[in-house]
Image 1: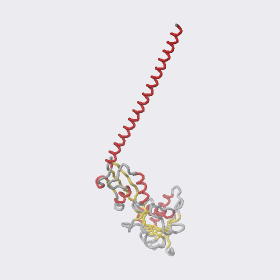
Image 2: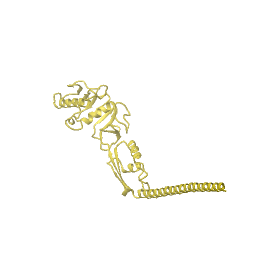
Image 3: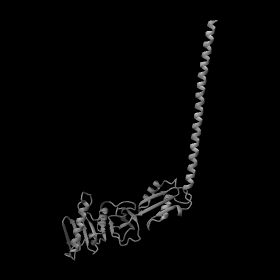
Image 4: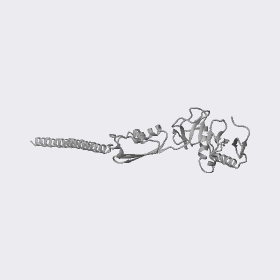
Length: 288
């Protein structure tokens, strides 16, 4: 009898332990389910809140009046319509979805006479785009052809198209047609000719009155001066830039200016400024 009681007590204790384990497992499962449901509900709430806020943001960023919401500041040659089209800024477009960085890069590559573009976003529904245009310093022509090509170049050497207001600019004649294409940068001897034009644009060297620089001769540049005399010009580092090349050029041009202004060779047909420290004048033999 005593053994049976002991057995029954053991069985009862085991059953109670099993129930405790079952209750613990059930509680864990229930807690896990509740937590999962809560996380799903939280994620759904966050998603719907984000969607709602995004929809409100997009609604506020929509262009409904281009004239009021978009400001284009530009010069006299790049029309505002080019900028509006380039960025897709029309009624119905959304400022929040336009990739301004990519559109800016594309427009700079396409319109050569734009030097820079700055973009200011005024959240949520306004934008200001400022255009800095390139300013030409010389017209471009080709050796052996009269007139010019309609192409011009700025001080950075970038070539673009412009005819209006350029008639008084000096001419750089490249060696061969078609010459440097719009959107590209002058190189080689033409780039050296540009250096001369820029150096003589102001200051003391402006008195040379450079009218044209021919970049086609083999060993020098041939410049037409303001008094219609011509000058051969060359300097150390003209074709392969070395330290002090720009100083060499300015020294050569300064010596040429002094010689021209000295009136020691009033009948000079051509000046020779290709040798260091020596400016000569040829009064007999014209250049062919």
